[in-house]
Length: 186
Image (cartoon, rainbow, N blue to C red; front, side, top):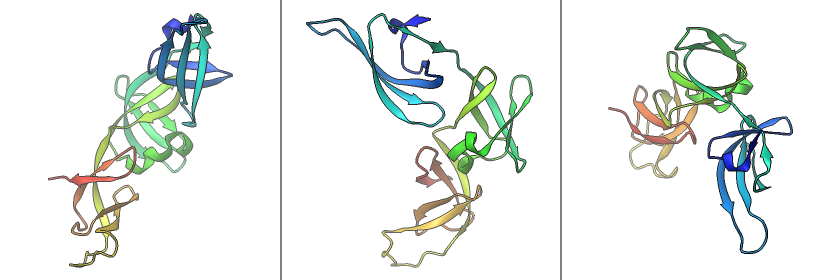
């Protein structure tokens, strides 16, 4: 068991059987009373964020999370298959575990997977990925009724909003956190 002095950003705590990642922490020493640690925690599975306060010196259960590099291979219909880049072992994750990351996964794409006791928790994608537009309506010159954007489907099947001048076959950079169009790729 560790104490609150060991809390840092990115550390994973086990609270009531669930894993919580420390997003922010602050050691507070008021003029009156004992010191305490104020934390903002994010559930590693659900993404829920909560604030929690601990007395200074309180015991906390810090968990060891292993982040390893994998390569996305394919979706076999039942799950997403990844290959460990160090020992070439394959790992299958369900669609629920992959979550919204499935909208940005391309075959042979490197990803980082967080593991706890050999069980996958979540996928860390790069901040942006380059995807090709597979279908979009032709943009009409002077059509500004839709604020200059139109829907476009990228090669993963995900639909994003892009400027009117983009055409099918254009490669675009997409933000993996929000799904927003960031620009054309040359």
